[in-house]
Length: 172
Image (cartoon, rainbow, N blue to C red; front, side):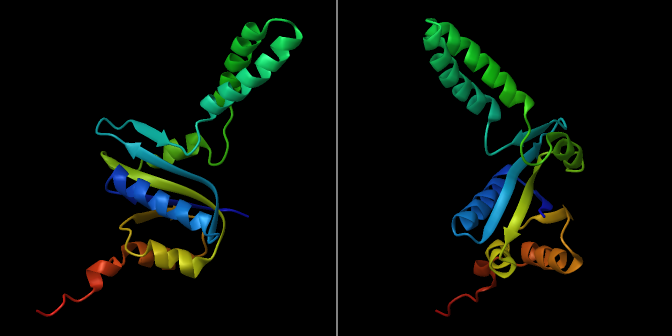
């Protein structure tokens, strides 16, 4: 079973930094993500989703490849490429993998203008190590499907002072 986490940040840059940190934790096998999406609410209140993978582009590339191969069979590779790319792009645009886009847009409406949020779909994680790395990230937990204990630990880790801020200045 996966858990969904939504964290707000004062800036898009902070949300992207935390997403990159979580992705690096995934490369270390400390967390397994189903999706990680940064949402941005601009001054006018419009919401933009910054997804990890552009399914339209991926679909177009895949469709073009298959269209070319099928086009060679019918002696019309250029026509096959064009039709394959168009159908692949359409298929990619209509598909939704990971967190539902409408759900994210609706939830992001709670953000203040000129702020950002980070949605994480977490399949598995080594909680203590992940929370230690997120300590002092500065985000505010909006919602989560964690149990109360994990949720409180995440809130505390995000709100905690960053390790460099807690170190005492060196005596001179």
